[in-house]
Image 1 (cartoon, rainbow, N blue to C red):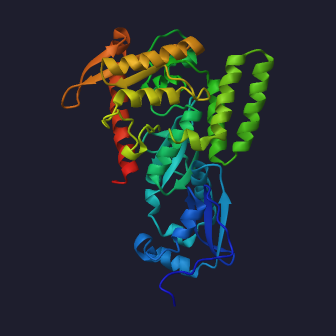
Image 2 (image 1 turned 45 degrees about the vertical axis):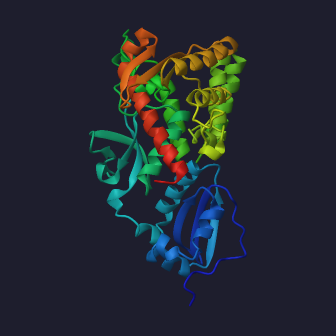
Image 3 (image 1 turned 135 degrees about the vertical axis):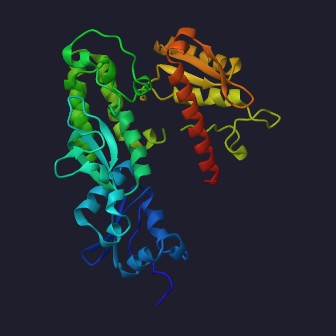
Length: 388
């Protein structure tokens, strides 16, 4: 017997996202997802498979005599399809991978303004459809998903397309129609919550969002697109072009989920220098990099424009950002505020430049956004250098 499985040569695997199924006859042994079906499937026939995959998967590959695959439009949809197929078929080599208590689910609460959350199976009462951690009833749940980290990243992408409520409180006036001026949650400020906490969205409109999220996790993206097309044309016929334009952006995002999920810009000037934009003396040019990134960001009118931009740096950084935004405001009549966080020698915030009233009102949110962006950028930079 060979020390490694023999590679099938009668199939050509596409270099696209999708789900693959190892089979023995009609029996499904293992189901997996891939960014590239070609690369992932070929990896099972590498010389070091015993080290990279482990003996259980090696045993599965030896037993398999067929590999089927299903192409998806994105890795996100591959993640959802993988979960549905594993739940349906319960393949032997998938169910052995993890203790069922560690599986993750997307849950939608049974409330007037439902929350969309990621919860472990041990926190869910599946029989009574209740969430034990918060004592809420559930309208539905999706899963299991074997990789919690990937699921949370996937939900971030869904949330960019269909902003939803997770932990914020529902404004009483949203239900009782009372006037109030509460402070919006951070997720609303960055476009990830539709404003449930400040009464910006009605129960009827929010129900549409939840319905679309449910359809998405049921793998029915085509139905969502058809419904959105009808809505867009209806608004256009009523001359409500702003609403029609917003729906058009949502349709574009659904059709380009791979682009939405990249939710990253790496400065291109000087790719030989780890992607840094550089000066003539080969020193990093933070101002040039910031200018490049903002200019590239605003070449995407199909993406929702921000209300506030938080820049990391001092006067030079905020000035270049203002110049770029001023050009865009002239052309597109945007009202985007800019603030910058100045750091000390220990890289701790010491001052905020820009609109004083805005900085005072949203101090915590500005510092949080800056901190998260810094953490995110470091993680992305390390991943580019392959040191994590």
